[in-house]
Image (cartoon, rainbow, N blue to C red; front, side, top):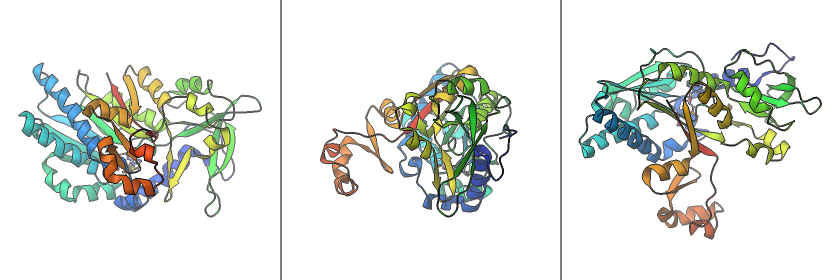
Length: 366
Ligand SMILES: C[S@@+](CC[C@H](N)C(=O)[O-])C[C@H]1O[C@@H](n2cnc3c(N)ncnc32)[C@H](O)[C@@H]1O
């Protein structure tokens, strides 16, 4: 993402660094990425099942109003090995059977990614073949203009991709309060990124006014991710999302829901753990308050909640994230040995203490 005209010898803006490093990483790794980290949608099909139940409900409502389209266009960006997509499609098929509906047969599911390797691997996988009549694979950059027609998509989803799209890191100077941008370069060996600072020039970027207004509320010296890549994706979603009552976009990601979390964290700790590296790929926390401002400025409704609140809303039952698992309280005893070995307490096993990971679900709709 362009934006800063400044340069500092040897350092580049974090968003440019992130784009370069991550594109190379995903193109090279393909689905071997899961040896560097896990994602919850890979490990737990509950999230895809929840998506399908919500979307199915919306389609039933559209049908009752005579508004069901002949073709139902679903898009997913940042697909990994495609499991999130395939679990959704399996579940839509199942819901059709038990609810006597005919939605699966209408679905055209576009899987979009910057990595041709991941697209090919998903296409050639067992489930890719099983659902092949419904799948379309598209090489794309979700942080740029999308190759789709306006007003043409009914459901867009993405998991843990917004944290990969280029983000700037902004900070108000502790010396004079000016808005500065963080530039980075790789440290030697295993040392963290080295940082440098230059006056921020963001006026040409999407939602620059919202970013500046948000930064004015942040105490000096706190470095804050501004996910301009994700915000650009919102602009495109606004263009391609069908203008009706049932279409929606949903995303899941790690980050923070409230600006108060920033100043509640000691400054050095906050600044150090903002960008995280997994096997050479760089993930940046998603700033949900910024994306909420961006969505609202496009006229969207925006809501965000913890993953456990989301699942409780859909399934009527609370689940807790325990590393790569999503467990209900009745499942906790079954995993007690594993949980105790990982340092979880007896109180946790009795369902008395639930610590949440900062992993959230958000819905964007008209
Ligand atoms: C952390 S992985 C998540 C994969 C999958 N959604 C999951 O949850 O298991 C990030 C995914 O986003 C893709 N990605 C990263 N940057 C992208 C971009 N600019 N446009 C489209 N896809 C991107 C990667 O290739 C990868 O498939």
